[in-house]
Image 1 (cartoon, rainbow, N blue to C red):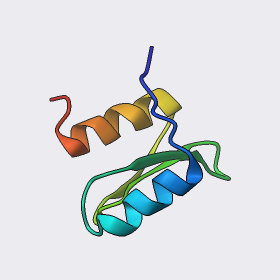
Image 2 (cartoon, rainbow, N blue to C red; image 1 turned 120 degrees about the vertical axis):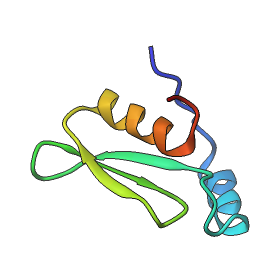
Image 3 (cartoon, one colour; image 1 turned 90 degrees about the vertical axis):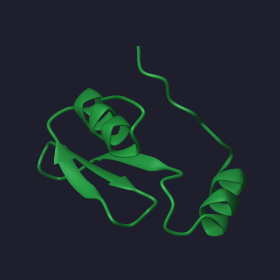
Length: 67
């Protein structure tokens, strides 16, 4: 099972504002093409994935939490 952290919106926005260009948060969001848009708070990385799980794995690779 995937680990997903759910901060309050206020906590999340505060952390994002304080860590510009850092890999603090990643998003996996369904898009209109039936896939998922995967992006990072560093604003240097964005891709698409076929499934939510694939998107989470891509985000983990981006941050170096898995190989």
